[in-house]
Image (cartoon, rainbow, N blue to C red):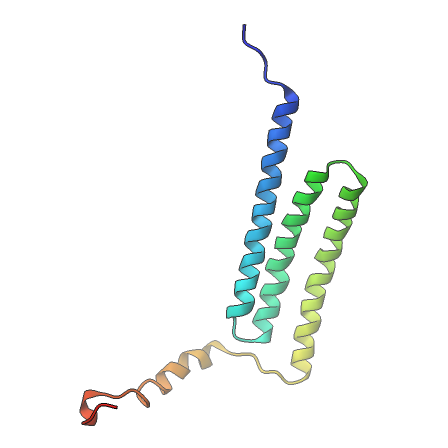
Length: 134
């Protein structure tokens, strides 16, 4: 006789993998945010990546925590914290970018980045026609 699969174990397995996927996405977007903050050229781009991807990373991680807690008071607090992060993170990034603009911080433009390597390409590099090696 074939025994039916217990519904409790199936729900537990789906819940476990949902938590793993949500936490994995949270870690991924937080890592992307970290790399973006380290690699981007100015305060405006850094504030942009920090507000978007970090909010998404925290959102997925907190959603995973809420699913892990189930229907408890802690899950309600986690969802409230998730709402708080969704409201405050972009607001803080906007305040930082506005403060930078008001203090006169100029953004790094793409035309400036493309022109810099061309302008300095042949100044310090020795060539074979210089006569002697440095």
